[in-house]
Image (tube, rainbow, N blue to C red; front, side):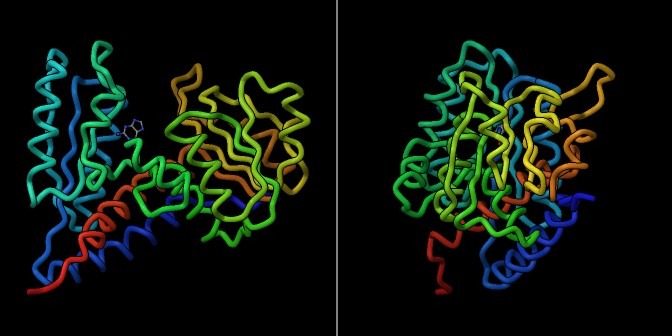
Length: 285
Ligand code: GUN
């Protein structure tokens, strides 16, 4: 029987630790504020944004909500980001993706001050991660590392395979595992003999966005399997990229969907908000 890695339970531990730190900061007169921007009304984004705001509320982080209509121009969005960059009372800025098709996502991400980029998407923060310098790190891969550590899974020296090479998950995931001294392979849709590659993994992180793609045949006995996928199956039920029913009997530990990586992403966003303040080296005057 595989160990089920409970992301809800672990994220609650993380959130409670953050809540305490936020309270301490408040006692010293410092409030943390996250600005959350959503453009349009993509239903999935609306759910994510609502959950992020709820988590802020739970931990005592103030959230400012900007719900802009679908027709908002890129210039208007950039002007808002610029205004938030300048506001000393705003510590973090999050622009929910995807943006409407006519907007240049890269330009919007680049417009966010790297010091307030709690999503860790700005090229400066990505570059810092790449060369081992401090900076914000993308929340989902950061959450995966936290899940592994808090579940007692050792990473150093292990063979890790990351399936997927997106900028938000796959690439930063590989860099974070490398930072933890793993031996890392990044596999993707063009990888030859994919099953042979994934079967080598002691830790397999799957982030491909294809429901149930990774079946038992892809997995080595006793491996730790982390499922980053959030998809809807033919019955509109949430499901991951891993076929839980065929993988669970083989692997040593696995994250469920829902209730695995998802809750950790939000917990690490709050962690990054807290870090944004700690980076200011706030001192009581
Ligand atoms: N859309 C899907 N995931 C994310 C995320 O982590 N951050 C933002 N800003 N948008 C997303």
